Length: 259
Image 1 (cartoon, rainbow, N blue to C red):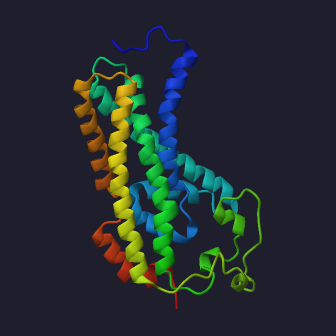
Image 2 (image 1 turned 90 degrees about the vertical axis):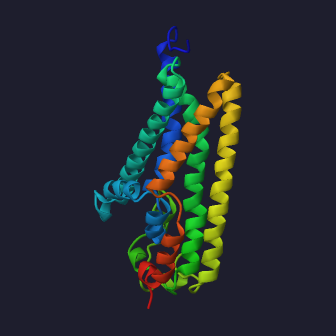
């Protein structure tokens, strides 16, 4: 019997923290989307997750930027923790004689890879797709009046962006012209990378089962639980589908602004 009996309070707390950490890294992405390409996050991730995090991020108002950012990250992290606890339920259903925290710990340790993938898709592929499709040759209007450090994760206010100095800040505002072929390349690359990463997820999960001495007869069922979690995530909206990409491409001037 894999139970929690005989463990002191600190050890039990550490096991629960191991459930929270992967959830935090998984969910924080939903609350930290870059202001320039936030619209793409509604296509890349489950829209409900983005809306919930965005509601709390915008709740304090524009004058409390960092408070809003903190609330957005906190809301996203809570979503991630709940998703992680759900995976724990799937693992507990398979490993009936294991205590829930210990069963959930194995599932969440494997799920760290999906947390990394979730962040990577926004930071790399979403931003590059947006850079290829954006047609403005000036600083985005939503950045006027803000400060550079605010939109790039800094904790100190930097140079204030104004209409007068925006053209000097081409690194932040001015971007390339509309390039559908380049955007398509990044989109296809995101699909290849995503499904290749899923394969790595299953391989690493199998190694975790071996290291944690889970009986081999449970491995297939646990991998089916992993598959179920991924299918739910995909059905909720993870990844840019062909239909979504077509929508983005045909409406790029309206989604990203321009003349």
